[in-house]
Image (tube, rainbow, N blue to C red; front, side):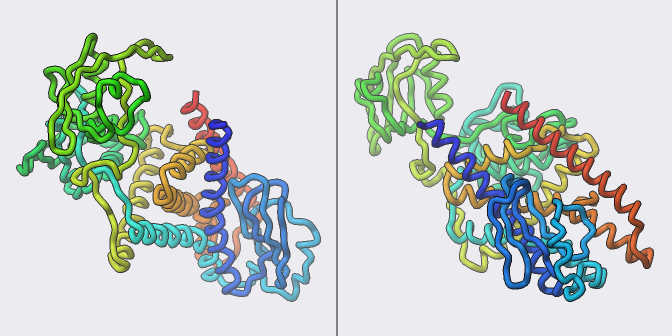
Length: 461
């Protein structure tokens, strides 16, 4: 039952996500075409067999296709290759309607650019909503530093607070990941300003990198840097009849010591329990008072082998974290507008920088994700909550807008290049040139999709 539910969430969130960002993209083209009185033959979301269609009073067919992996707006007189349009549509009183080829080059450019612009506008509006709703995020505190990692070389330790990376102010752990991801493929120095636990003194360090993350994914840059977020050793749940509950521990207890080891984080706690071999002396803080318990671990056998457990679970919600470890990012209307433009700009720059590095070979093409990865990310975002799902919409909308602006024939960017060529030439480009350019465009986009799906499969297996 759980598998069926997870599958429904994955498929449903994937369809909703793509329908929104693709629908808005095509709506941008459609509204711009209507503004210039160009007759739109068909507005379709999805490809393949038509599941639903309706014709409005201006003879435009609105339809939904079986495969939610794209869409298009077919205009009268447009030469771009689309799905096969029936002869009935082609012969619809064409002489009485304005075609795409009848309008000026400037108007064509506006219609072409309107799709990507609509995606950026969607991202801005979604970010405004996110900032107005407000969301909790993990603070920029370090919970683990791996040995011989870049994080250790930087001097970070458990409880350290990252203040700046490369002069960029850091307010959340997610911003640490974003700032580090920007340096993927680089050779040089990463500058980090931080403070140690229970200290206000700002320390500065520099870490040398060389072709960093060139063969790895940028998605989880913090792991490659060797750090993890700080999660306190708070008991979020207790196993019924488990060792901890039998000993008297309670939900909400903060574990501060196991035997003679001071515990500062959940990761330290799990390590201390795993390495134990006999009864544990556990000290906790409960409502400001300290309590001590003796707990005998039990042995759990699973696919990872045998390990010791005491039957406790960590916190599962940011609401359960102490206030000093989280940030609540909520803004008024005018602050939200400004912050939304900044967020959209920052993600756009990050994406463009990543694309450039993939083209030059500075980072691996493994960073390219396809429909499978999008569906999994959409599912995770949907399960994480409304704000997480909104964030996914904004990020993918920016991705789609930028992708369509690439100068590849059949994409909007390629169409803008063809319009520019026609403007410079003073006459339309030849049919043979169009045919070859579209073939090249289809090959390039097809290759991109192949790599994306191939990477998705490799991630699964």
